[in-house]
Image (cartoon, rainbow, N blue to C red; front, top):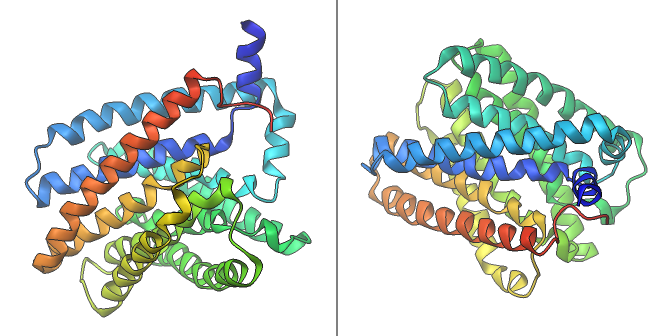
Length: 319
């Protein structure tokens, strides 16, 4: 039993931090919904407790992996696909900074940690892509993760840093989002759909424009102008495209990559509710309600599948 526990720690994937992102995004949805849509705050309060417990467990296990199996961590860090998921660490920290924004000391500490690691992992990932002969088959929507992390920084740090620093992260995120969108559409259209294991990462297409809209509003003082509208519409368009591709997801078996679903939909939900708050446009209100219900169902489904996989011993195995 002890040997089995050690092996589970050894093969604990960095992708598990996406669980914190999924629950963190949903927590922010209910926090905003309590303010704008009059949804009872009890849901947000319960989710706060859940996300803290999950963060402590996942961080604790991965620290044990770093201490006991540093070579395995190094191998993940040098893997052409897995390297991108290290940005889920910084993004999880930035989401926690947003969730506990009322506690200025804790929020600032988490923002500094998240923004610092995000800066490192963003440039590490970009230089990794430039220095390696990466095959087209290795390109997948997970490449967006380091980019989305840059767009997430201003949402957490607008009150802690100056305009130009936040614009640096926003500019970096927007620039590489546009480039990677073109690259990944080329890969999917001309080189075949991504491997079944990574099909859920297609949902990540929704996240960059949704997070960019939220980030842009934090930077420009909350004015919902034409650019914010365009960003929101692009996120909605990608969501519709994902629904059009839904048949691709029916028969895939559960992988931990299913946790790529919750955060993008949580980001879209938060963008829609924020858009309604700024514009009072009824359609945004309706879509916000529908989106928060859908996101909640996705989180519940993926959580259930994850628990099933853990009980069957299918998680944290050697690939």
